Every structure is written in C-alpha cells, then in structure tokens.
Image (cartoon, rainbow, N blue to C red; front, side, top):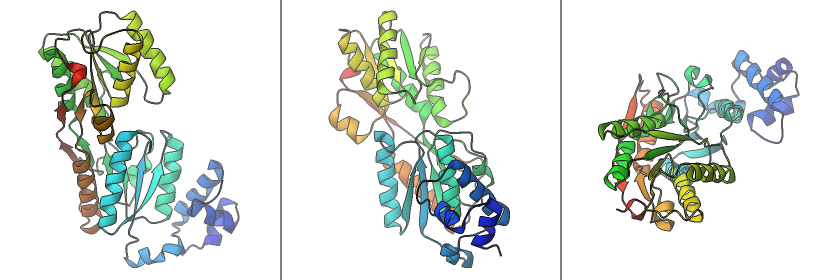
Length: 330
C-alpha cells in the first residue's frame, strides 16, 4: 500500500506539502495541488488520517459544492441542506467554487482525498469530467453531470411557462427573456427556462425576444447593459428574468429612466427566496420549492451512500409556483 512519502516522491514535493494539499491547508499553487492529486490517483493512495473509511466505516462527512454562497437562492438552499444533513448525523464541508472550474476541480479532488461519504453539487461548470469516473456517491442540483449521477431540479420549463403566461395575461405582448441564453441547446435543467418561455409565447401567437446577460457580470455592468437595452428598445412591455436579482436590477434601472413598472413595463423573476419575498414583496416571481429540493437531494444521496442504489439517467423534478405581485399588475 502506498505511503505518504511515496506520494511526495512521485509528485516531487515534501511530505509536509502533501499533507497540506490533502487537508487544504495554507496557500499552495494549482500546479502543486494537481501534481499531488495526480500522484495520489496513480498510486491509489488513501489518507491514513481517515483509514477508518477503508474498514467500511463512514466518515459522516458530505461535500457540498456550489457556485456562490452569497447568492440568496444558493445561500438559502445550502443552509437548508446543512441543517438537514446535521440532523441526519452528517457534517458538511462547504466549497464555494465561485463560478471557477479550476477552483471547483481543486475542491473536488480535496473532497475525494478526504474520503467524504458523498457529494452534493450545484455548480454551473460542465467542463469537469472527473464526476463521471468517481467512485463516490454524487447527486447534482440543476446540472447534468453524467448518466449515473441523479439530477434534482425544480421544473424550469413549467416555471418559465407560468412566468411568461403571467406577463401575457397582464397585457404584455413584446416580451423579452433576460439572462444567459443558449438558444436551442438544453444541456442543463435551467436552460429549459428559455424553452418554456419560447413555447408559451408561441402558444399565444407572440414572438420571443432575448437579451443575453451573463451571470458572471458585475451588477454595475449588468445595469449598464440593461440601461442600454431599455433605452434602445422602447417597445418592450414585458420582461422575464432568469433570476430575481436581475429582475430587481431591471426595476431599478427602469425607475431611473422614468419607466413606470407595472403600467408601462411588466417584470417577473425566478427563484422566490424568503429574502426576496420579505424585502421585495412587490416583485412577481416563480418560487422554487427550496426545502423540498434540499430534502430530495439528501434523500437521494442517502440512498446512494447507505443502500448503494444505482441511478441511470435519473432526473427528479419538483413543481414551482407563481407568486403574483405589483410588478405584473394590470
């Protein structure tokens, strides 16, 4: 069986450095981390500090990887996941990938090295192929990572239909979708929001319009692009955004341009967190069932960990609900 010193020798680093990489301690270059993780993989090295896992015992640790911990939707979902896992006897190792595939891969390798019992993933990257070859139980939220990894999501298509129909029913007929657009491809469940949007407008004999707005942009740049759009598109009278914060930015910019919401412009968002409902009750939105999502993520992961249940192309979908408010008032 390979030892720590074998990994250090193969990676060309010190034993101390290997230990720091395994425990994610201190500042180390990605080159060093990758060298250590590659050596561990090639030598099939398992950290001795968690040797109990080799004896068939669980570590009672679950890795949770998300693209942001400041986004209100993710923050609320993560808090619910952590609370439910704790009640089930698990501790959480929380990894903030920050929309960075390289950072996500580094976290994934760290979690693997530390022998967590399973991983819940909610990141946006489709670039990481390691998910498909891992021995660990993995469950995904809103992302298709592989045929053997179950995906849990809310019904993005149905939610988009509810949002778009609400705009139509409120009198809008020149309606735009604002968010990261994929126009035709649907690699992930969230991409279905565009399809639900387009389908509903087609059913109402209306033409869909789009403003591509990348999620990675800063709020100031988003506001600049929204301002340019509203200034140069005076005929727009309905907007469905991919998330609530973008909807709030639209309403803020519209107010600064003296565009009356909802008299001249109807706006609806997506997510419906408690934060939004409490502090911005004027926004119409599509509320995702956050507690049910957390419950299903944990229940599915538990089936993989404790019952060794296999999943093949499993997509578990929960319904959304419409919250009507002032921003889409007739």
